Amino acid sequence: MRKWDPVKHPGSLEKYGYDLKAPARVRRQALGKAVRAYGYKKTVEKVAFLAGAARIPKYLKARARADLNWLKKNYGR
Image (cartoon, rainbow, N blue to C red; front, side):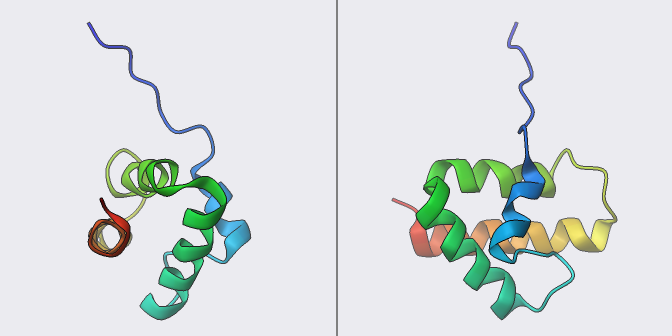
């Protein structure tokens, strides 16, 4: 049985300017900064947590999923 290990600090993206209520351009600039700081894998984990397990409204989850797809398209291997 796999132990569930949630992301410790999904809000740590905020220090790079990431806010789900911000326009897409601002969010994606912040994600670029986060990828340089945390690396691709850790940033994807944080955004995936927001898109899935986080208790936030559905419209914000949709934005997080869109950002996750953007990350995979632009920074994915």
